[in-house]
Image 1 (cartoon, rainbow, N blue to C red):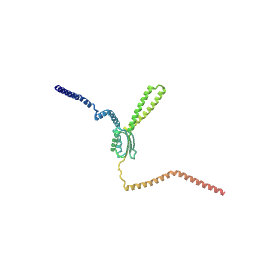
Image 2: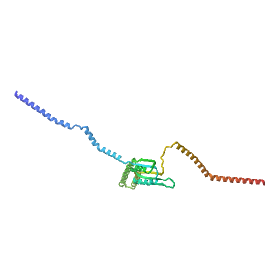
Image 3: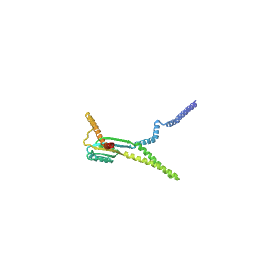
Image 4: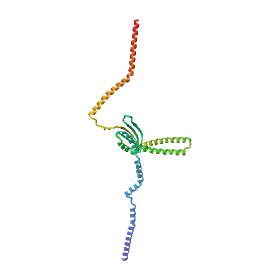
Length: 299
């Protein structure tokens, strides 16, 4: 019995050692499976953002470039003012224009004796100083009329620049092809015709760009000033004022009609004089004819 008990004890010990060894050898695959698990959603979103970052950055840069394009606006103003001291205004306007970096292009003055002094100025003012010039005119006189217009030509300006760049690249390409692939006189003539056509379009676009640049960089202001010694602000007309104006208008109409009648009569006087002379001559000739006829009958 003892040998059998000893054999059973040894067998149990070996079985327990084998079970423990199997458990220890099975643990590493579980750890390996945990490290090979799928990435989390947050990591996937971060990876997608890192992949899309260059294109998004390029789009934002392009948007900033479009937004950073300076606005091109053509400003113009037509102003009418009155002043008590025309001499002071005549000196102040050119000084103000020069102070703001502009220049006067046209001056027309009326200083005839006994007439109301007046003047007209046309000036080019930098666009950034346009509103400063209008504010500075408040010290020159009292405004009667002010008309300000602005034309936004930014879209046309940007479009012209893009088309101009494309045309210049096309011209360069045509010149390169003419140098490399022209083998006959006909090819050279055809290339020159195409280059001349492209060059004409380029010059036309460049002229338009220069015009828009000049007009948007320098605003045009036309200013008319007349001298008024005593300024009377406009008031609401009363009944007496309306009655006086109506009576003055009626009498003025009759006076005008009478003057026109007299003037028309004077204009017609030469013709009437001729008619009177012709009538008198006809009457005199008729009387002479009657006398001759009566004398013949008596004979």
